[in-house]
Every structure is written in structure tokens, then in C-alpha cells.
Image (cartoon, rainbow, N blue to C red; front, top):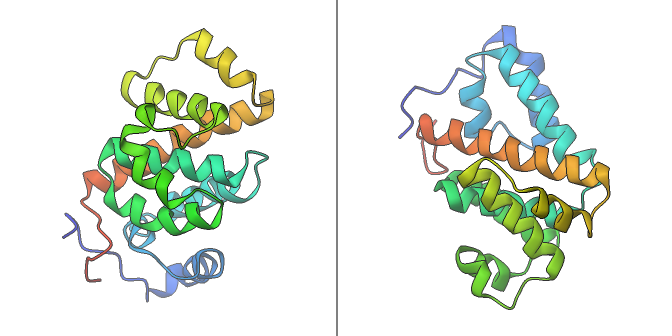
Length: 174
């Protein structure tokens, strides 16, 4: 159960934002129900994450693989619940999702995916990233894609930290 009650999404002052969230996300998920306690933050969050998910050159499979790894590293079950179907739709395989916890031992990942996963691990657990790792990732991605990758990893660490701090879960009742 969430540590705060979810915001009342029937409030008239947030109706346009609730409508936009519904249009862009299909529904007002628990994440947004919590964010709507601060409409300005909810709107900024929506703009930022929509840019990452829908307006970047980084491939959807790499983006979703990174999000799923961040969720695993941070123990963010809600994040994983929401993104597993998106990862599969983007081309990440069931076996890759199964092996994500031990990806370094798995033969299911390409060299590009391994470099991206290593960057995800370093950014999430050590914060500091070695220049050699950026060079390795650069063998597979453009400068634009590297920036988008790093922002994606950082953003979804933010998402999981928000979710876990307030104990937001998929099975919460409204």
C-alpha cells in the first residue's frame, strides 16, 4: 500500500492534465495518481518522460532493456510490471527478461546490449562511469544516442526511486 493516499483525479482543477495523461498513457496509472498531488510536477514529469519514450532516436528495445534493468537493480516491481509488456513489444525477448538479473553470464545479449547494460549497472550502482565504458558504448551508438541513453538511465532511476520511496505498487487500490 502506498505511503500516501493517491490524489483525487476527479478534481476540476486538474481535469485538463488528467485528460492529457489519459490520452498519452491510456489511463491514469498509480504513478500519475501520486504525482497529481503536485500538478506542476506531474506535468513536468509527463513532458520529460514522454520525450524520452517517444521522441528520442535511441531504439525502443535498448530503452526498454535499460528500464527493465534499472527496475531490477532498484527492486522497483511497479516499474517492471509497467514496462515488461513494452519491452516485449519492442523486441526484447522473454529469455532476455528472465536472464536480466544475471546478464553477464547469459548468452542472450548482443555486444551492444552488453555495453548498454554495463553502463546501466555502473550509473545505477556506482554513479561514476569510466571513460572506457563510454568509448565502448560509442562503438555502437551516436553521440545523440549516448546522451539519450544516459538520460534514460538517469530518468528511470528517478522513477524507481519515487515509486519505492512512496511504496507505489501495481496492486494498490485507488
